[in-house]
Image (cartoon, one colour):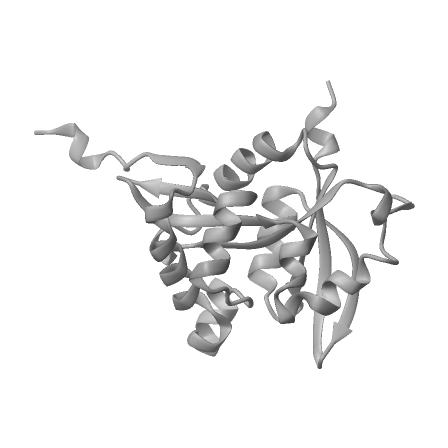
Length: 197
């Protein structure tokens, strides 16, 4: 009997290529809050921000989108953005505005080199298999020299995503705020920890 039949396909991580953008966009659209039922939102989580193909291409070319692949097919992505890129997405405007007053370990965020951890999404059949950790490990390796902090926001109505990011990845809550009738946690990943001996 062929034992390879029972082996799980290996997950590879790296930077998205131009031909990956359509798959990233499809994965994003399938998991947008408005395209997911309430039960699935509670059990599986969801993504809040919709980006255009042009925005994804721009981000991939500039900051780079970290992707996880199985057999060359994108099964997950993690999208960092500059503050300027994030500022061009209407849903993120109140979040970006908070940066002016936000402090991390008593240090004003404006005094730290920071990027926005724009969105992470993993195909349903690959969730809970370590893909999230692989995406973040790849991202940390790539961005730790360039930034001190990666910052994101997670809706209070998305507990699965919040717990995965706090418990599995080690993000920390900076503060909680409300904007446009929605409540958010501002969370951050400390890249400075990656540089400690």
